[in-house]
Image (tube, rainbow, N blue to C red; front, top):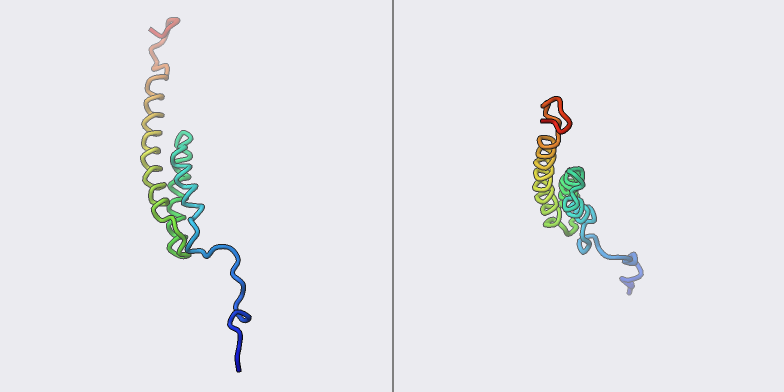
Amino acid sequence: MFTNDTATRAPGYGTPTADRISKMAIWSLILSILTLGGLGSIAGIWLGAAARRRIAETGERGHGLATAGIIVGVITLLTAVGYWIFIAMHTSGGGTGGGLYGY
């Protein structure tokens, strides 16, 4: 007997998972670039690692974006830490004591 193959298949709405770019990977790169004093870098590194795990499980695209988010996050985090160390060393009173201008 003749059966219609399209009658037994479920309709395909939306795009398949493999064609979609991981939103976690995109946000990883965005937050890493926006560093936000180091907090964005930490969030970008964390999201990048989570995105890589999810991409491996689901087959989504964006592995390169997630990796870039991790790399940029590490670089911006190191830059932010260096910046905060510089600021702490050059703006503290330093205990010079006395005087109007700290001399």
